Length: 332
Image (tube, rainbow, N blue to C red; front, side, top):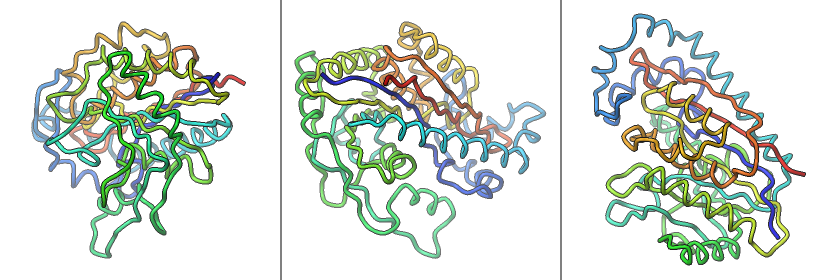
């Protein structure tokens, strides 16, 4: 039988494919243009609203020196997570991530989808000398030399889809991509940053966290995670299985209280607390916390072993990302 032996979590923010100088100077210029801001109460606000409400010390929190320190801390955390994934010696990695009008559109946007093709494509970077630093950073999630076709644990993915349907989950099933499509940022970031040099099959579990009106509730995310845990244990093949949550934590406004609440609930395996989260707190980028909720419940048999959390403030309005990286204790 398959065994769940390891689990991981990683933010995939644009900050993590940007350069030090972009952190120190670039975001201050682009963040005022972002329309997707919500305050801690879940109310839509503008950048100017946030700037007006920012504490007096906000400017001192985003000096080039402080930004450089955060950059170094995030880079070190990603290096650590990369080595932990390698040390787990997995046969398959289930990656729970979101789609932001990459494979799906609002014309047809399932709450949950699972990809079961033999491989999944990531595209070659298309850049030009006139691209902005932001466009260049986004392209870093893609391939430098040509398209890549990453392996998928197809048979297991297909089996999981059928078994979830038997448990009354409505899962969109994908056995390939349309012309011109490639895996979304939640998955390409994981392949590029952590899985290079590993011939490790994945199972992409795709969640509509971002686009209303059909995002799953935290309660439903807990239910899906519990079902995945049962199915991993029931799969009739001797495999070392890992699960990875891709995305989060809070953004595009950093909410340290929310992030620390999530981390503490994960540490104490408090499914009820996570299920009771107000969906108003999970809007815009913070919606990706749903990916963590699913993964956390799926790996409830494992204990959280290592966490790196950096409140990634990047402007005097305290916009940014709660950058979180985590690993659960690996079973030999």
